Amino acid sequence: MKIKWNVWLKTVTGVGLLVCANGAAAAILHYDQAGQSQPAPQQSDKPKTPDVTPLTLDVPTPVNAEEDAAYKAFQAVNQNDAAKKIEAGEAFLLKYPESRFKSPVYGALAYAYLQTGNTQKMQEYGEKELTIAPNDVSTLALLGQTLPRSLHGSAGSPEAVQTLAKAEQYSKQAIEITPTLQKPENLTDEAFTSAKNQTLAMAHSGLGLVYVRRGKNAEAIPELEQAVKIDPNPDPVNYYLLGMANKITSHFDDAVAAFNKCAAMNGPMQGTCKAQGEDAKKLGATQLSAPK
Image (tube, rainbow, N blue to C red; front, side, top):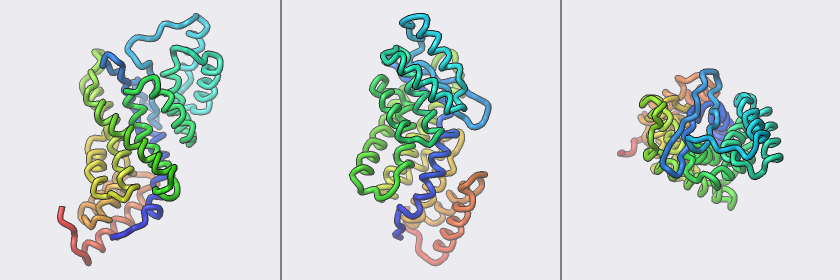
C-alpha cells in the first residue's frame, strides 16, 4: 500500500509539536561525567512542563553574588510562562555570556522556545546545551522527537536529510545512555523509572518517525511500539504514527488497534484516528494482511 507521507504526516507537524511542548518531557534527566542523574522536580499543573535543574548534583559555585542572584531570579520564573522565561533567560545570557550556569539556562530556553512553537530557537539552544553536556539525555530526547515532527515538505530535500540524520543521532544516543543513569538517593525507584521511561519513549518516538519520514515503515513499527509501551503518559501522536505504519505495511488488525487507542484519547487527534481506524478495518476486510 502506497500513501504519500507528506499527505498524512501533515497531521503530525502541528499536533505533534503541541504534544511535545505540553507534556512530552514531564521529567528531565541530566547526566554528568560521574554518571550521576538528576530529575527535575515534577509539577502537578497542566500542561506538564519541566523545570530545568543543573547538570550535576552540585550547584555550580557562582562567580559573584550578583550573578548568583540573577540566576535565582531566572529560576523563579514559572516555566509555564514561556515568554517571561525566554525574556529572563536571554537577559541573563546577555549579561553573563560565560556564566557557569549556562547549561541549565540553555536547557530551560530550549523547552520555553518549544512552548512558543519556535523550533529553530529550540534547536539552537538545545544544541548549545549539548556542546556543554553531550550526555544530557533529556535534551537529546527532546531534539530527537521534535526535529522530525517539525519537518515540512519533502524528506529528500538536503535540509530534511540533515535534520533527520541529527534526529536519528540524538534519539539513538538517548536510548543508549538513559539505561546507564544512576538513581539519585533522594528519588524513589518508581519516580526514577517513570522519568527514564518518559525519556526513552521520546527517543523511540523520534527514531520511529525518522524511519517513517524515510519510508521505512517496517523499521518504524518496533520503535513506535516501544514508545507507546513504556510511556507513562502515552502520546496519541505515537499511536497515530504506529497505526499508519501498520496500515501501510498491511498489518490491518494492528493498525486498527493503534488507531482505537488514539481515538480513545481526548484531543485534536481523535477524529483523524477514528476515521483512519474505520478505513483500516475496511481494508482488512477486503485485502490480505501481511505476515508479521
